[in-house]
Image (cartoon, rainbow, N blue to C red; front, side, top):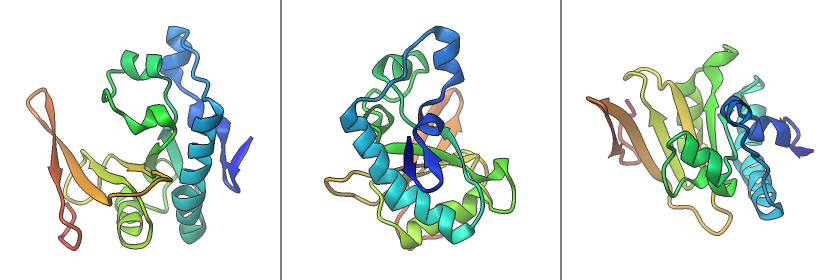
Length: 159
């Protein structure tokens, strides 16, 4: 099933962890509708703008899968509202490029510069809520064994 011109349901539900653990990672109709929304309003505009493939490293996660990988207890991935994107996988476009494009051009609920360094995140987490978006921008960093999230003010320098 296509969620948008360049994104399929299989791409956003495939999980090696789910396969390894024997966990079903099947979204409901409501989750599929949410996935169509993020595909239409975030993924496809990115894909069209850069005219380059963008890898989805994590999309929909069933509650069981989210728990198994120690995802956030209220993760929007469990509702089909979030994607983790990694443009660096295919080259030509950087994760910083897609982070900044989303920040400056698209509607989103949450946008996270995930780890990496000041020049490029390791991946970009983005969520989209069809019922309204907060435009909440964060940066994730490791401090010891903990992950901390720092707010980034829109208009401030990323990184």
